[in-house]
Image (cartoon, rainbow, N blue to C red; front, side):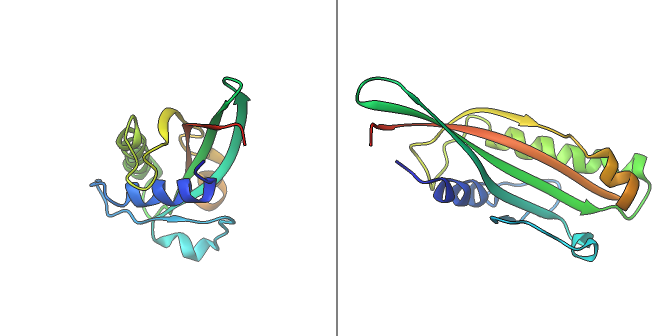
Length: 145
């Protein structure tokens, strides 16, 4: 079975092949922590988040693996004009990954995705930072080991 770090690396690499409204460089991290000054540039961070395993047959297991994609950017202009641009980017990344075979993890099948929060209101209000998280769930079928 493919490990979760390899899957997160594959998701980051796949995002980097996409064409979006702004240049995007996704990076896999295990402990993403940034200072406010670091967020002047767009951050797209891919984090392995969860594995849920259930029995499928006596020989096979079903693994649902969640990968979180954080998108953060310090706002420089008006909230009402700048937020929609970043929300559109988040939706574009989500759409791009939907039902897509990952070049670095061909055995992983896209199962579902969720954007929550679409933007963290408290980050905007307190620090003027756009923060959104896409959770993408991939399905892997493996043997019972």
